[in-house]
Length: 246
Image (cartoon, rainbow, N blue to C red):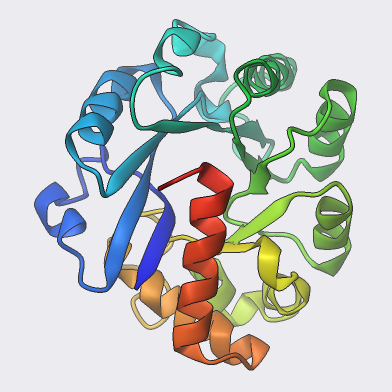
């Protein structure tokens, strides 16, 4: 059995009923990173034992500000802050605003003793700088890791967990993301789909679904020379421990 540590069930491209019935997937961490999705994510997490929620403000919408994020963090089934961070690839919000809102969410993770889910794209240096300034929460995960061995080693040195998406299966990622996936310690690795985005090979270009976390897991298990069932058990255990899922 697998856990999808990062999916977006509020996205209209996702068929919710099919997502929660995914064979061989026993838990989903639903990421709601816009204020308009927080209430529904909380409701779903309260209604379904197999779904947890992580609430945050994506750097794309950082200009909208923090809203009442903190009010929702104590609700049943909410297990983390995020995803949040920096995205200098699209720059949908001013960079200074991104950094400010990212820092504020790190503070919330510290205040409420919650794990932090980080998005970083084309912004490694500033991501590390903001985290150094605010302090890395004890449970921090770099979601959808897109760096190489240098970046992963720096994250691991700070105690972070690393989560890999379908990108690891792309041929173009062999020299960086896949290389990084080989060296993450057993107790620090998570897997995800980032549904409905980033479908793994051979489904690339299709709408992604949580069931395909198994494709990601099998690919990485083979990459690391580990038995698939043992890797499934390992990543399930890591994800439950990281998020505090019973």
